[in-house]
Image (cartoon, rainbow, N blue to C red; front, side):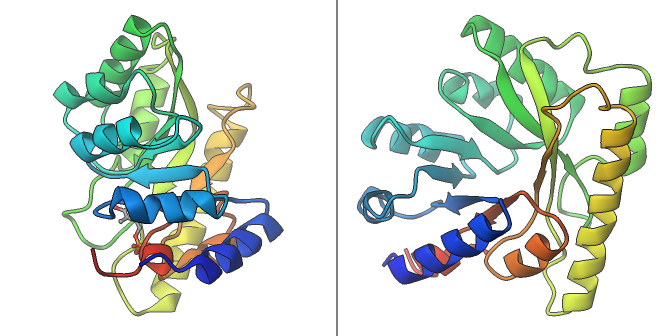
Length: 222
Ligand SMILES: *Cc1c(COP(=O)(O)O)cnc(C)c1O
């Protein structure tokens, strides 16, 4: 069951920080999403391509869909016609494929580069060094049908608020450094996607511009 008063509270908190609330609707029904849509939310995120495509087809066309999960390159073609932002670009190979499918659809697709900040090694993303290596050789420059609009990160799954805060502030520093150097002539590079249900308040304190909130809005069940 969607919690509309939580949605309204979080919307207000995000607005106060000039951040965007992305409602993460993965595993939730189309009917639950409609309730949240009818309360005014227009930006939704999913983490599986098939589910995203199905929901895109069934729900109003003024929804902006964000992809937040890791994806295989062979699935990019299914979302390329309509996706508004891909948060989870964790390899050059994936960026190249998004560029290719964007070109086929005569679009420019906005992406975020995912940086690995969590202690868990099973989480994905570029390391900071790896990304800098790619930027040094201008690996993304030829990809004219993607637009790198910022960086995304996921904190360690921990109860330690201090650890989460340190991970977020570390990524904010890295983001600022990238913006001042490699992206200094790219005004569109301005988004920092940090924060989920358990840590969006810390993320906003640390400078997040996009929070990805699922269970706090939709509940933990199906
Ligand atoms: C599921 C998910 C979220 C939302 O998580 P909640 O804890 O339910 O708010 C945010 N980001 C990503 C990448 C996710 O997969």
